[in-house]
Length: 483
Image 1: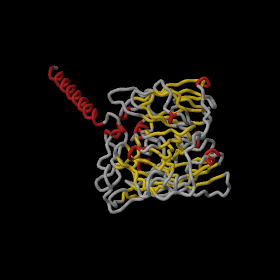
Image 2: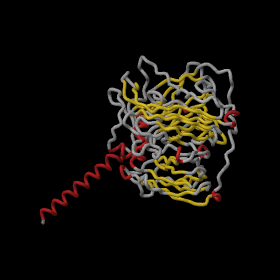
Image 3: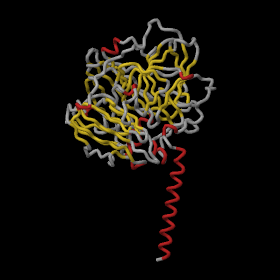
Image 4: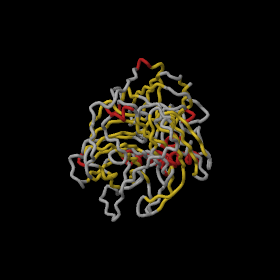
């Protein structure tokens, strides 16, 4: 008996030491995941080959009718070169990595013919930020089996905005996005048409899809999850913009519009320009802000978007201005000639109808908690056969989302499908100016609490989840039904 007791005590001591070592190891290395290092990349590009930033092509509309658009989209396997002229397997839509831009007008009916050419993998295409019924949202219920196709049709009924599309299969989203499946959906309307802002795509209006990826010493793309990846999401050691590492983009001398997407699986971006050059944020996830907000740093959680205008008019032709994420150079702008057409940063961009708290008929609470494989919302992990919340069609609700503080706490970007919301409060106070527009994702740091308000205009089953994709895949996701 005594021997058995000694063995039990020994096992307990070993377990305590293992847990202590685990916390000690992670305390300095992962206090917050946005600080996870990108190694050896804040350096001068000494390569003899200069990489020009690729600009995604605009997908061709197959329907000549001005009010109806039809597109073909193929999710496929291919290869890409990121560094050292080494080919590595990647996924892409209609190409080897990322996908084309889909341009749409408010009021337009759109049909997308989606083919799954990924071999033996099922997939979906989720229209992130789009306000559509649940049966065309592209979540884990709209699975496209290997070598099969799906035709989806929806009508654009929301303001001009920079949205995006990506796969959303249950437990497999992280890998497919990491391999390259992502693209932009740009909506225009009467407001954007009339504004005197830069809008010449590819000349003074550029999309920047910002990602980080892990490459081995040979330049091969790696998606093998270790304990830290499961805990904090997959962080990479190589920054990419539009699929290119440390690229150059020639911009006109003058005002330039950048459509920014944090397309990383987990990393939070803290973006700034060389010499703290200021810029003006004109849009958030769901469209224009009412007025431009002057900034020197922009924080974007995974999946958040922002539109900004940078004024390069004070620079000489040939001068270079670098874009950084913290202390890591992402890319470099090279100033070119002026364009003939002048643009402005208007004092007023649009008018946003504020949803008043007294319009809400119900309040709900969502607590983001747990770690590793135990991440959850309100103590529950994703079950595709369970509806977690039931919402009445056309009603307004307040959702209070909290990220409790703790030793292993980290940030969580909280995303809601099928709706754009407004932020009422952040930590009991009015949100910062650049968070006062339409949003579909909100970043919560440890200890933070936000109140969101939204009107649910479309029927169906929708997801809410952490947009750190490894957390989503591990079960940090729930479902709500709108009827």
